Picture 1 (cartoon, rainbow, N blue to C red):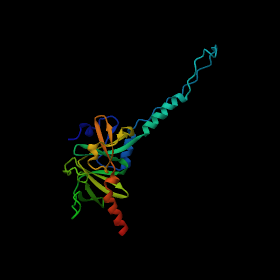
Picture 2 (cartoon, rainbow, N blue to C red):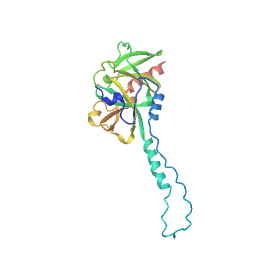
Picture 3 (cartoon, rainbow, N blue to C red):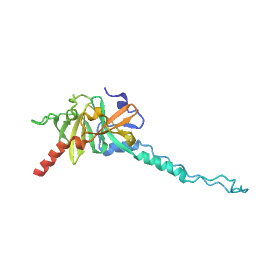
Picture 4 (cartoon, rainbow, N blue to C red):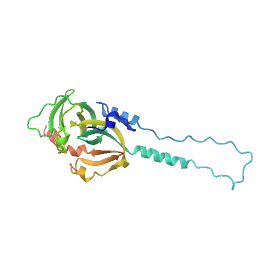
Length: 230
């Protein structure tokens, strides 16, 4: 069972992930949800006082740089975020860099591949391209994805190779402040230390951040070896 807010998308600062779409389009949606920093309008100069007060009694004028510094800090804080596409494996939420996600599709027919590793679910035909589908749960040693209506295939592009990741369900695209990202606790790193690069701790929510390049290193290396032999 997924959290209710993961389906309604009502949490502030988050948007619902479309069933499919290019990563660039998804990222544009995330950018549209951002609130730009507000820059204070410059104050209009006051008319000269016909009866000026002595210099020592006159109040000191505020320096405009006093206001500019907080604005720069706001912008810096706004830029210090990561864009994630998140999905579920069992009851845990995982996140990957949205820029590697090409699209998220419903599970259609997956053709088994003889003598393939047990975590290779098979292959699919995606608009004329044959793409291997990896059961990410099996890959991480977490069991097996039982395909249901909520299941999705996350199509990622890593090192010019397209791969499908079979997951229990897709969640959202969101911006995560870098300040919320910490090293993964022991109970998470026991899954596969090479697969996890940290966790994002949000109010009432923990997102496990995956390093797909390391997680899929073997598959990517095999593809590179095949290209060299050809």
